[in-house]
Length: 340
Image (tube, rainbow, N blue to C red; front, side, top):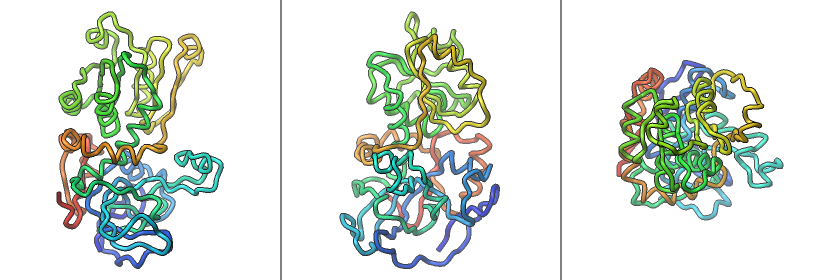
């Protein structure tokens, strides 16, 4: 079968590999229908930070059709359309036993510790599969995982009704967070991104006001209103510093972007303003909830797709995305006959 495998930092190859065998007990075999390229895929390609085995089929955002289940698997059968949970958790550590699988002490991710979805087929533990509406376009289904990440982030931010919220970064997670806030939160929504085309697209889909990260721009939208809540989906140290400077006291800043570098921070700023810094890692129990939201969100999610490609185009897509040339939010890989 054909797969895109990461061999080392900067070395992603589309190649023919041996077909998969039958699933082990507790596992399932899938025919992949669609997959999305994530910012963490690009980060791992660029830095090699999470390479634990090589080569490894990349990709952790994907949908597929169950073709075979191993012994002991219940609730899944061949023909079921599913999306994959990206978190490969142990189930035995204190975090897992308390239901916090995203904080598992042995946590790895699909596409890193095991082969992922940038292939025609994949084998996964059945516990990582969530069934979705069979009428759903696979390209939309493949966005369930980042939608769950965004849902977890806005829940961690927890802005009270009526409070304005600023989302910095209109990439996949920031854009999806803005989409969810536009549906779930009562309050003015602001977005900022140096890619003005992406910011404009998110604004069109969500009704958010586009601002720059300076006080006059924010106040031109809020007037006498006060900004206390923001979500950073950039990981940029400069953006984090700017957001901390913009926020009034009594709110919080949620961090969901993958950061590069370290921030110099005077903790007295947080103390005196009673501002909370909130870390957001992957998602907790939000994936089934995100899957349930997909039919209602199908139309706006389709609008946020940048383009659809085949497996053989993945390396070129990585180069394009790393160069910041995307106009939309998500590049979707159509695999096999993964049509709608």
